[in-house]
Image (tube, rainbow, N blue to C red; front, top):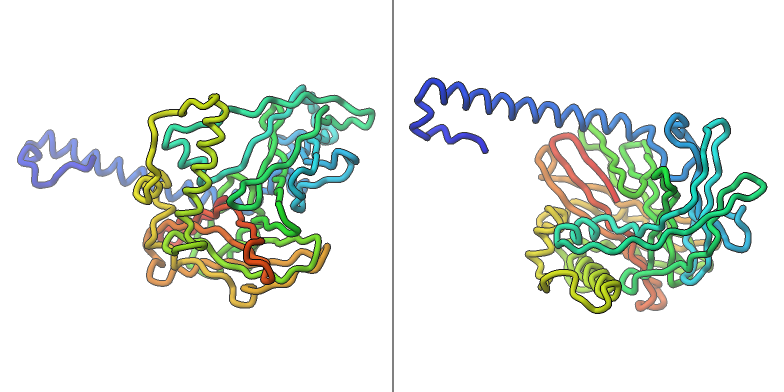
Length: 361
């Protein structure tokens, strides 16, 4: 805690010296934090998405992990959304000369981003999924013995999962959809540079605010006309991000209750807006919702089968430029011919401080 300069005890020379030392230490920490942001920004430029073979640090990564089609393990499916119920397997492809020792098991994880943070602060944790045993093929691929049935959230229409091997290496992200189309967050836009986004990884950029935001990739097995809208903390109805987060948290707590055979995982919690905003650590603050907007020419899109389209969401800090702010959003895509046919992307979290912007999923 910063000492109170009006505290009479500080007129004691020894206490004044202690207070000065405390303030210098605080300043050192601020400088250290700024340097860490700079280092993170530089490192982010070279960070590949999980499972992306390009620009990998081969001194660390020893295998490429991918979701694959159960019927053909050579077919990678973590690049495009798959339909709910599709059976998929997990595979690891050792990198040449890496000395990868294989993995006896794979562990599946649900990518929940902001919702996971909120659950942790509410002391609600899901039990880990049982590990999947593996087998080694003649080709050298390490593959899960059993298939995994892709699942979705009933509120977002999509599910997002990744898996890890025993070394903690992560696969690409599997996006599961209940309809004929799906959306992923593929990269952060930092002026004219696009940096791949991976679950749990934050992309940080320093310098004056230029064109910054997130690029979403939309896939479809048909050619629907879609309406793109943003869910943000300050809106109501179908576009209320707070209401959407509440649904996701309640859905997960219900799953935890089922895992505990009906027992409540802790004292009952009334998920009011205030509790959710506090647990989200600032990302659900309604004051920040006006900082993001969809690029006008992508509010209505047509997706050709096999040819993904893009929706760009830009950060427009306006009066917030040069100050500290937090916000978040999710992208909702609705079939123009059927308002009940929609999917909602994962939640994108945004931090801004001075000339630094940080984007994570």
